[in-house]
Amino acid sequence: MSPQFAKLDEVAETSSGGTPSRGNKGLYGGEIPWIKSGELPDGEITEVGESITQLGLDNSSAKLLPAGTLVIAMYGATVGKLGILTFPAATNQAVCAIVPSERLHRDYLFYWLLMIRSRLIDKSFGGAQPNISQTVIRDLEIPLIEVEEQARIAGYIKCQLTEVETARQATVDQLRDAAALKSKALESIFTGIPKSKAIGTVANVQSGYAFKSDTFKTSGVRLLRNANILPGQVYWEDQVFLSEEDSEPFKSYELNDGDVLISLDRPIISSGIKVARVGAVDLPALLLQRVGRFLIDPDQLDADYLYAYLQTQMFISAISGHDQSLGVPHISPTQVENVEIPLPDVTSQKKLSKQLNEVAREWQVIRSAIQAQLADLTTLPNAILAQAFES
Image 1 (cartoon, rainbow, N blue to C red):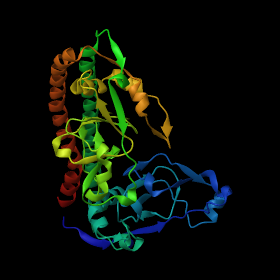
Image 2 (cartoon, one colour; image 1 turned 90 degrees about the vertical axis):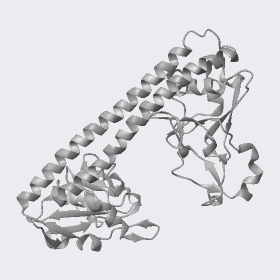
Image 3 (cartoon, rainbow, N blue to C red; image 1 turned 30 degrees about the vertical axis):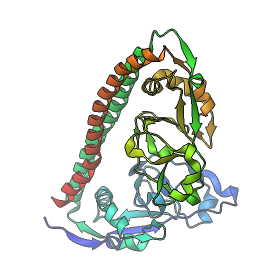
Image 4 (cartoon, rainbow, N blue to C red; image 1 turned 180 degrees about the vertical axis):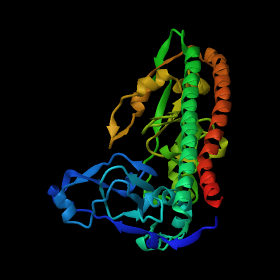
């Protein structure tokens, strides 16, 4: 069945919300959920961070929307994100509410907007970030078929995406479980070593320099930040630079091939601990604040041995539960240096490092396979959407 096309404002009503005056506390904390654009989850909205009073609703352009309303973010970093209200709620002005007519099935529209999101954003740039105006939304041309067929397509997509999400979550769990097995395998090698010392007696932790963001450039010498460390790898997708001239006074922060690094802010994430080794492909680079580099005494500590130990649950448990800075868990170089490490002589460490490296190599193979599976599952929803609307 070939679809006909209609502008969205011919088959749906749209409206935006509003923000009560922040200077009047009596307008907030009431019984009316108030949703901001950053809270749209590309699915059902089941919780909200703020609420407003009836007075706040009456004294702003916010509107009380019924449960089941489809909403889309129009501005900022979350532009294009979608949501479906599971309870009556109001929104701020960065959210557009869409109420379809009888000719348009809500879930069909939801998935169609999900499919075209990147195209919609690409043609809607305004200012520093892409914005979608209500005019753009109203002028969208929707492919219309019989409502019963719309419902069938929406049901098919929902079923397929649910299966993909189930598989994706299982794969994430598999990655976590594999990381736990790696940690146990590494830990078993350290078990039974009778002697231990504080890390700080054999290696100091150097924190990076607090380079000013207004000196960052788009080329030059890369700055290695927290964002550039993932468990087991240096990750350069998000890069900032310092000019070669500006980097000259900071030779003591130059990274070297083989350096062992640890993130000092939010060091533990769901996929493991953020420690990594610097490779030749990562250089030249300078160490930025809140990343630690281990300055190792090679006569007392083998770098491979240390790197393996940092990935064990023994070390993770020792640094867990420390202070927070602005809500972000962080550790200090001193706290890391105070952690005890099982420590035989350096010759024995090098022998043990061969076993530790073998565990790490096996883990890398497993992780690469699981990450490839995750990448496939990440692209699959777009393929499902395209196939459903093209068929």
